[in-house]
Image 1 (cartoon, rainbow, N blue to C red):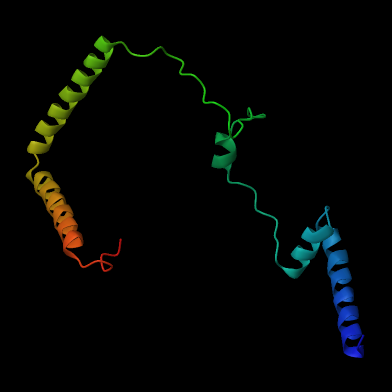
Image 2 (image 1 turned 30 degrees about the horizontal axis):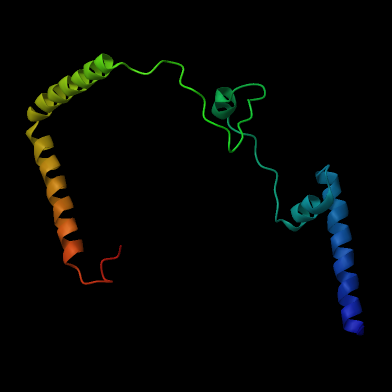
Length: 135
């Protein structure tokens, strides 16, 4: 081995040992993390803010496997009469909201402008030559 290569190896070894020894004082686990911290490549993450720790559930959560089947719903399926009643409620809410929107002309104009812009963009994309559509 050439003298330069030996010198480079010796310097690199001394650097790693000194960084590792200094990092052991900071990091209990030492090893690669201690070396990375000494070189400035790794840091200790700050503690989470209180709103995060307050909203996290306490204790161990149940483990859910990747290929585990989903949990069964807690309620029985809706009957056809219940489905029709739900559809009627949704239609009534839609009519009520449409009546409210009709009282605000600027909302109607904005909705029409959005629809017009969407149709115009679709027409422009369809009329663009192949390869120039940006899709």
